[in-house]
Image (cartoon, rainbow over the protein chains, first blue to last red):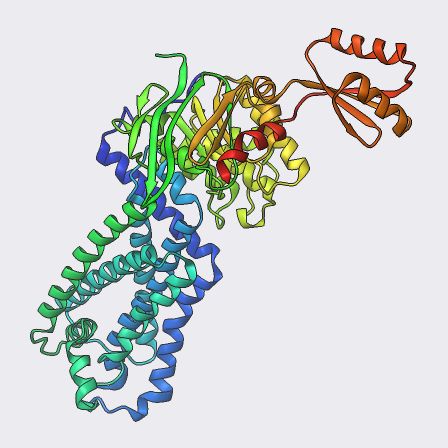
Length: 267
Length: 305
């Protein structure tokens, strides 16, 4: 045992090694989903409960004009569950920083940012799973999308961008929070933002002040665009506005996350 | 390549206005154990974090296994293992999964990683709980897994930051055995500790750190000598005898014991001959070495106040 077991760094190029590090850590975070009953409930149960609640309990009382409520609802719930799921990402990042594991990773010859990328990508994958469940169950309870392949692809693309953006935001909050408790507190911002949007009720039914907020906050255009794309309705400029908001959020949150992570973990 | 596995000179670090390290020089020979001994807040962890590339020093130079920490941190990272104060393993994964993950992050191939994990589980007596989640592990098991994870690549240099803090006596003894085995295999170890007996029994050399400075450095025995010589303690049967012996020999009287510094074995004989000639019966005697505790108190008392 006296001779050193050299790391296999020489045989592969730097980008390949970086990719390896990211994949290993994505795998780690996906295992966490299975190991952590809370997360399973979050990913599986929340969309289901919300869907049944709003479809059958409140749905009858909400006027969505020409659009049947269950058709109106799905886009909103997709976005709500993405935001809700991101809590685990923020908490996971904070837990890693609180525990000594990030220190260990940083003392190893690996890509430091792979920790963050691992959390972000695992978050997106969890969200995709929720999305599939929600759309599947939606179809069972009367959701009737009329989109063609283009509409589906557009909606999925937009949702994917939203997932990436929100996951980076969650990573950033997790780093800034400093503790698991702090992270779950801070992520409440992300959880509640989609409720004050056009997710569950149309904006034009709201009082003027709230309506102004709802119409101009970054989550509403995502919901409006996804809804219009899935139902083959006129999309207007909501898709472009959503695209602009979330490209900006992604770039900003990813940059800030990388920077604060470097600083925080080298204190 | 030098004979030193770790070579630090003039290392300084401040956080804001607080000076944590005020110019630390340190050399650790290959294949030896250096214990960095100091109270809480002395700068032990900060120094370890600088040596292991986690923190950048404000000044000074550090070479680990021949690589400069500032210029080539990646090479240093390839040559070291680090076990910090907090357990740095994944609580939700099993012991085996943890080791495989770390091995993959050290860029071992899949099969090789699994093989290495197997070997380490065996070596660290973790085969039985290998497939249980780490959150079910005891403190000792956790610490063993933590150290196993630092040894994936069998690094030539290992940093152990307070490896036995919080362990029960049995786990602590087991940890000492483990550290001795690693040294026997040729690993250079720098360990920090607040426990004097730990430094005494594991380390080839001890560096006492206090207030961000190395206040003493040497082999455990040398340090003890620095503080004072051995002392002869004579116990008498009553206070009259002890007073008479004190008048005859000098030294410090405490209850029925008299303690005096001695330089050589001959001093002991001389003392016993003089008490015998004076007809003072000695009940018992003992020769005591100064403990590292004494060393520690003497060296740090001036600086902390």
